[in-house]
Image (cartoon, rainbow, N blue to C red; front, top):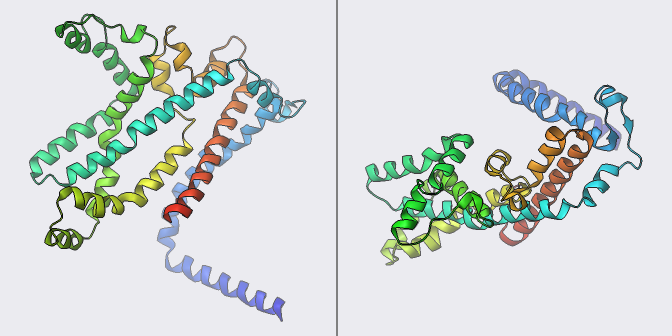
Amino acid sequence: MKSTSRKNNKIRKKGFFKRSLKRDWQLYVLLLLPLTYIIVFKYVPLWGVQIAFKNFVATKGIGGSEWADPLFKNFIKFFSDYNFWRVIKNTLGLSLYGLIAGFPLPIIFALSLNYVRNVKFKKTIQMITYAPHFISTVVIVGMLLQFFSTRTGIINQIIMSMGFNEINFFGTKGTFPHMYVWSQIWQSLGFSSIIYIATLAGIDPSLHEAAIMDGANKVRRMWHIDLPGIMPTAIVLLTLNLGRILNVGFEKVLLMQNPVNLNQSEIISTYVYKIGFQSALPQFSYSTAIGIFQSIVGFILIVTFNKISRKVSESSLF
């Protein structure tokens, strides 16, 4: 009886799929392009991940290279590398600093902008804050070099006008994390707030009207209506950001690096790049193993925080 029921279910499902395919074929055609992109650029390259477990030789290719002995040799090598704790500390330090300083600011900015009634002023502020997001990383670093340069830099001009001595920001230990994080916030603040502004626009206006009737001021409406309204979105974005905690912006860090700040600016991404492409003897297997370690940590953090947020706030990514 059970086997007959299963067969009937399968037949019904097949029939439903065929009818759905015939009825919505335009949607399936639209789906084809992004699916092809994901398969070609996200799944096919996974074939190359196996070189992390091999003694990869370029002339032999991925399939022809011998398996490492022991299999996790490259991972063990990274864990025992004298640079291991330094790159982990720098990567986590920059990520957590950026997350703590940068995550609440777009929320505060969106909440504040939501109460601006002058449309012209609101659009001007939005345009000014969105603009840095579209500037190339190379140009941003060039601007930072100009702003923070000794003597002619605008920051040092302000410092000297206040009676203090000039500071060589790029040549002083300890300044790199602050310059990196706050320039990143400046670049992404406006663009990151777009999603919160869109969420705030979807909150039922009758809630605000009722709160105003009850005598609630703007701060109370922000706290009791707007903030709970955008909280699910904020939790999803926080979960995604935690997944990228070991994936600090590679290009900007590399461009801002110099011998003075190298101890603070060497992160996993730049270390992988130097081992894989800049060293006299490129170690592709070793650099791939480090990249896999980075991805696994990100995956564990996403799953863990997703479970915690589902239990605590009933909002989660999946």
